[in-house]
Image (cartoon, rainbow, N blue to C red; front, side):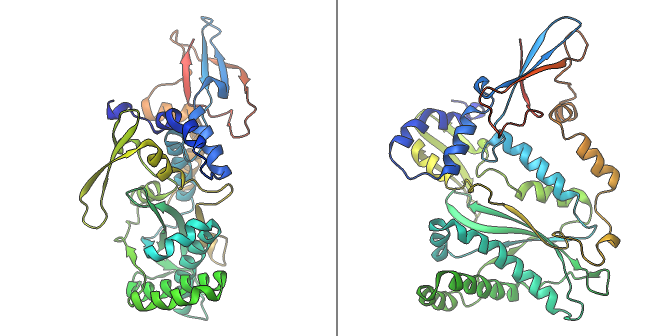
Length: 381
């Protein structure tokens, strides 16, 4: 099968029923999201009917699943989320920081997903407390946007936090102070102490022995990676946002072959950037993907500091995007406008040159996850 025609949806469609019969313990969020992606764009999900009054042609627009787990709908989710985040950004340089945990801790977050909240809180506290202590009377607040990835490049369980931080902060008296130097050796140890203390408090004294061992094993702290400064212009920052917010665990373009039973895919190994190719059974492929489906209502993107709420000087800070651009983004976020902007084609333009009008909505399953106003898949009758 050509790699260009391989879809993750098809692999799930071929094997999901047999996979479920194996008796694996599956979370409700997994069952719900997989069902949604298998039915994504299927007539059974319902459709909108459009009609051209000039030539009497009809067009069916089938509803999509709107799941973040869906590679097709996930792309729209990323665009919407990036647009929302972009509207918040302060006009300053930002730093991209990645907070990781050692392999010895990952199993705890796999067994108890409630612990994932601690990764957000501990990483945010690591940054916020450092800024605050720069001047206690000012209590400087940076802007922080955090997103969680639970996967590594090989799709295995590896929860970590991607954070975008302003290289500056607002204080009680000072509107803005540029703060470009963040000592990462210090952050490594601060991050280690904060997350281990949080876990100790949550798990109790049974965690103490491992906590002590990890302090000795990782004497320089847990790994904190920092990208070079992002440009103060919107383009660079938005590219980072789009890349690191809410994307599916795997791009379909990484699948090299699928023979109906085995899936062959590649990834670039983080340690040396060497390309690695794996061939695994479809069941194993499904396992690697579904563990990264978040529980219902779990927020994968969170805001802290200046990006979380209004502070004393928030109204005096310049935004990276103008009000006009933010309004433009909102106005053209509809599915029809997206296709028009992306491809220069109006999906509701009839072959006769007239614009088709909505006739009716057919929502067969009455699925609350269907957004009747934004169905991007269509066929002509």
